[in-house]
Image 1 (cartoon, rainbow, N blue to C red):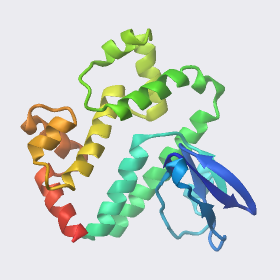
Image 2 (image 1 turned 90 degrees about the vertical axis):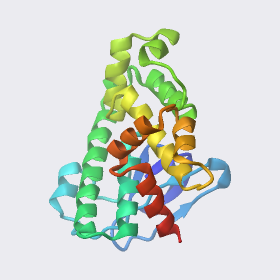
Image 3 (image 1 turned 30 degrees about the vertical axis):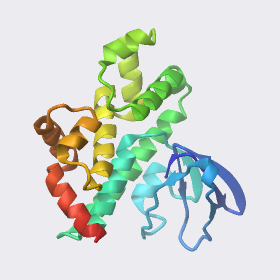
Image 4 (image 1 turned 180 degrees about the horizontal axis):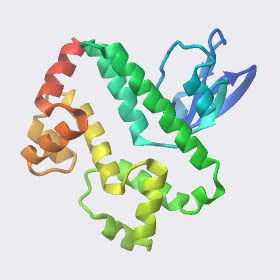
Length: 234
């Protein structure tokens, strides 16, 4: 899955430029040729998994052939990938079964969004939502309300909310929180920052409130996340 930038993949003998919001599926034993260029700022997640190519989930979703699928930019993809990575690092009880379920959720979510992108009506409000996503990702710590953002950009508030939710799978405020939590996880890897520092850097003046939000989003308090993650890196 290409989370950002662009890459080149060879699929069935042909090279394709694959941009952000697309995923590539290779079939078993298919040679995997791909190119990353520094200037393209590629951010790519991989999962290697084994199953029969007649698996009902792949058949049902139509993702049973080696191809490039446009599935959109969705923060839940990254959340699922990162949770799978964390499970593989920690190797707690039933981690394999847990990751199988997350992989199935990931494929179903991608298939659902791929179908949305194939609908021409889906793109009616897409440019405005794409611009909002870019703004939110650049300054997730910014203190503004969605109503203020809609008014500032001359958007219909309710239509913007509906369109944003349909495209990303979550409401704008939830999307901002997910970006903040992703940034917080990165900052917690650096022990030079206290939890209070991290809270302020991602837009929360109250460290206790930040800790509650973080635990709800990640499944553990920031202090525990930092302890586990630093132990894994060592």
